[in-house]
Structures are given as structure tokens and as C-alpha cells.
Length: 184
Image 1 (cartoon, helix red, strand yellow):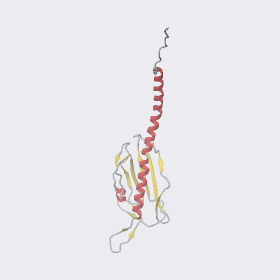
Image 2 (cartoon, rainbow, N blue to C red):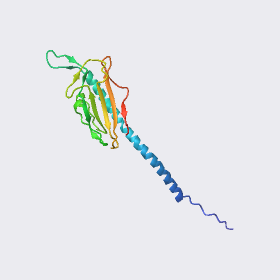
Image 3 (cartoon, rainbow, N blue to C red):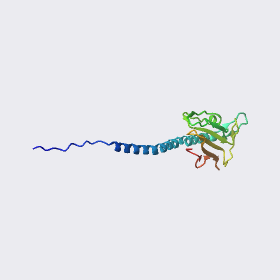
Image 4 (cartoon, rainbow, N blue to C red):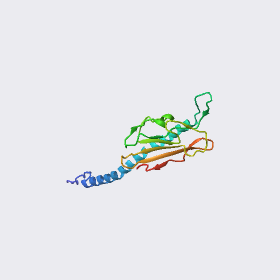
């Protein structure tokens, strides 16, 4: 007696199943790519806050350094503020080399890496000179700022950090950054 076995079933994906999987992957990619682009731009903004904090630290060190002027009757002073410096390395959407000029050079501040943001200093100082004073409670000595254009459109992002002195003539900065259009 012969027993006929039913033919063995092959396990494979049908064309419909493959197309459904491709549609699902396409929808996920369409949702994930814009979100990832936003996260990448947001990660680039950390450069601005980190560098503004470092500029403030350089300014605090510079402010408290004692200086003696030339001459027999010279006095020793501290509390010096560097000159205002316009935007260095203006934003282009691409990384550019930071040039340490003006107030940045006086502070001894430089950035060894290429940057996405341009940086500047607003101060009570005068162009090309130091302004020194031991007067406490100056609420506005500096504003350090960064401008960027991460996606090369007409909208710029701005980060600012204000600094002043307290009753003990110690340089301090605002509790937070002023931020406008962080990821444009």
C-alpha cells in the first residue's frame, strides 16, 4: 500500500508581505529623519554655551589680575575690562576657524577647533584700551554673545551671557543664557 504524503510547504515571504514591510520602513524613515536632523542641530548648539562659559572664565581671570602701570608714582590696579570686539568668525552654516582678535586676544582666549558660531564681546571698555576700576556693583560690564546659522537660511540663532560685579567686586554672570532661535 502506498501512502501519499502531501507536498511539503515552502516557507517564504510573499510579494505582498515584502511590500508591507517596505511601506512600514518608509514611514518610519520619513518620521525619523527630520527628528534626527533637529537633534543634530540641537547638539551643535552646545558649542555656543560651552564657549561663552569659557570666555567668561577668561574674563574673570583677566578682571582680577593685578596690573602696575609705568612710572615712579604708578599704582597697582585690578578690575580691568577688555575692549569690545565685534563678531569674530561670522556664521555661515559651515564650520570656520576662530580668529582671536581684539578683546579675545587680550583675554588670551582662543578656540583651537573650527566653530559653527561667531563670537563677540560687548563691554564698557574702549577700543584699543583697558578700562580699570575697583568700583563694585557694576551690573553691566560685559555681554558675551554667539550668533549662528546652522542651516544656512535667513534665521540666525543668538546666545548671550551677561556679566557684572557684586558688592565684593567679584565678577559674576547671569543665571542663564539669553537664547533666541536656538535651533532656528
